[in-house]
Amino acid sequence: MLREVESWLSTRSWSVTDRPLHGLMAAKRATGSTVSVVLPALNEEETVGEIVSVIRHDLMQQVPLVDEIVVVDSGSTDRTSAVAAAAGARVVHRDDILPRIPAVPGKGEVLWRSLLVTSGDIVCFVDADLKEFSSDFVSGIVGPLLTDPGVDLVKAMYDRPMAGGGGQGGRVTELMARPLLNMHWPQLAGFVQPLGGEYAARRSLLEQLPFPVGYGVELGMLVDALHLVGLDALAQVDVGVRKHRHQDGQALGRMAAAIYRTAQLRLARGHLIRPSLTQFERDRDGFRPRTYSVDTEERPPMAEISEYRRRKAA
Image (cartoon, rainbow, N blue to C red; front, side, top):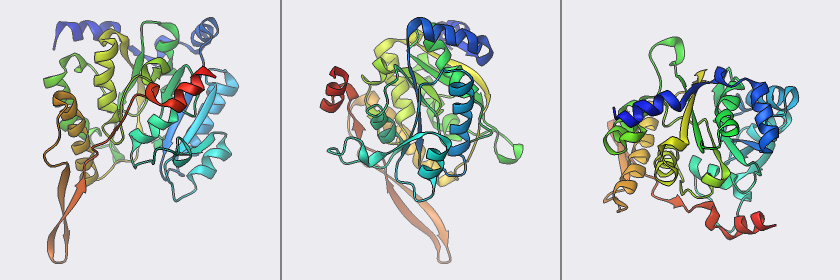
């Protein structure tokens, strides 16, 4: 590991207990900062309501740390929107945001569009499939942004137990993202959960970053932020344990392909020869190939979008 990374781990890796809520509230009042929490959601009726309720109770009613909770629904066919609204979130549908640009499927697409429907100086992203959710996930990663003006982006780090307690999750992290980062961007080797969906950043940074539309968004954002603001402006906070729905191996394969493509583009700014992935499924006649396209689109920095510029000027 680079000495720079060893030093970073000692100065930019914290625990949620390092910053009590009363200290965060004092920093929030002193800086006048506002905080938005965004939950990208697709068919998460079983978990999204509890997450919203916990954030509202702990960080809006008990202490006013969070100013708004926005759930961006990317086309759910279940009761995700109704459940989120009943729990107290403002629900916005992906296709209603920036309608002049047709939406494409993908998590990164939703996160990018969320910048147009939130107002916080600090934007905190939280996946909507978390179970046994704790508001530490939000306060932990927002904390350094409130208390340290030199920090621009904070990732959550945590244990990821598999269902039933056997082994650890984060298989795409260990098999794809961590090797890529260690080999090509060794300054980022200290991040425990580089692909984690829980992170917070200053709006002033997010609006300057391109957003891969799919699963490559977390890796792309980390790499681009490193080049834009430097390692010392990035940090991570230990928030304990993350429990969520785990995907099957084939879904993880598609995720890995999108992440590799994101890395490849940043390494060469070239074009994939074959932006697709073929996997195999067994049926009664044997193994049948199925080919999926790999995300090849990225959204430009939001600061380049005319609607966003007009909103900021208003």
